[in-house]
Image (cartoon, rainbow, N blue to C red):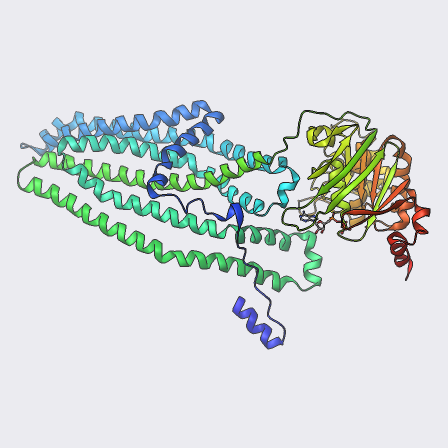
Length: 630
Ligand SMILES: Nc1ncnc2c1ncn2[C@@H]1O[C@H](COP(=O)(O)OP(=O)(O)OP(=O)(O)O)[C@@H](O)[C@H]1O
């Protein structure tokens, strides 16, 4: 695609598109955790991951775990009985006399062989049943833990470089939970079977076991090395996969379908998507010769030892060192041990592989836990009479200058504050400091005298209502879109009041199921609203909350004048009971404010009431004049 795209561009005389930027990590996330680990240390992870899987599963379903642990023991015992009975059956079968007599003599042992085989089968089925009882719930638990961890971190964590990529890496741990219990169960069963069969084999001839171990060990080393290469590639691809995942959603979401089509972005987006996939493929392909070499070499060494094992057995039998019947039993024991050993190796490698992804998941969960709010025990109760900012400073990670720089401000109940200023002057960041979404790096923000740095944020956010600049269009029913985040009542009265307050009654009544209409056209039977209607609904949500602090960041940017007028009338009507903050570029709207602050480079450069600022000849007057100059 990339070469075809370039060729096409040359023919059209257009500039070929640049490829997506390659992301190079620096800092704490740049080190591949595998890079410094030795092979022995990696192999030692298998018992640890087994223990972890058992502990995780134990919390989900204790009975199923007991079944899972008991089944390998039963399988092992059955394997021992099977081998012993096989040895007993071989003696008459390879003896002398009529075939019927020999069969008759071997029959009891053969019946035991059959029963042991049946018991093995039943134990395997029960183990699979137990695994199926655990796996879905374990996946749900880990998946939910991951989502909860991301939702609960301090919002400032989102701005930390690499945080989102670590989340993408952790997702693999969740995906791995689909197979890890099955892998663990197969590993344990194979381990017990292997020990039993190996025991039986060493009784028959002590030389056979070391030979057999040597025959399988190279495969084990090969499997672990291959898993290591796979993980290296997975690690190298994390950033590209993360970007690709995001691009996939943005490119295919119907929300941006118009923009993609009308700006003829499709080809370029596909080129981008394809380029990222190609880059991942190239890394995979570059690793293929390494895995080929590992597997060829390990199979070659394993083959030599296997030939030696069978040759040794043939030599023992032909030179009469062991009886033919014993040799036949040894064949069964070798086969059983070999199969069990191979299973131990394959599933051990899978567990090792799993341990790598689980470590990523655990590392992310630990990181998220460390980034969860730990602010202090103070609580905020309504009403909020006064909010104070004292020389508050906030700087985003990786930025050279603070987004909010030494801002001092006092807000009192009943007041409306308007925040204005050019793009990037720090208005939204200031609202995040006021609501405690971010904590000030320097200075402090207090609510009723309580420092937000020492206050449980949940008690703060119980008192806030925010219409952000970019608000979510929740794929939920109309009712939930209004009441989301609020204790539910069975009464639709307050919901309709909030809908009325933004002039949406007619539009909601026109929907196929009124308040029950699902607002997601992508879902069967779902309805869709216009941009302005969505914004009205976002406003109705905060009006429904009736919070102590109401913040509206460009709340009417998509509304018609009637809607805008209605929303501002509502704000005025309910303002007496709360602190209200309006962030806006439509300076006419600041007339409703008791106090206006003008921000530049994170600082308050002008403040006062509308009439004062209009005549002050400063930035406010200049911006107002520009907005009227058409
Ligand atoms: N999540 C973030 N991570 C890093 N920098 C950010 C982030 N959000 C904002 N900034 C930076 O902080 C500065 C202030 O941004 P902010 O969004 O507060 O401005 P604003 O005044 O609300 O702008 P606008 O009028 O465009 O909404 C800008 O330089 C911006 O690039």
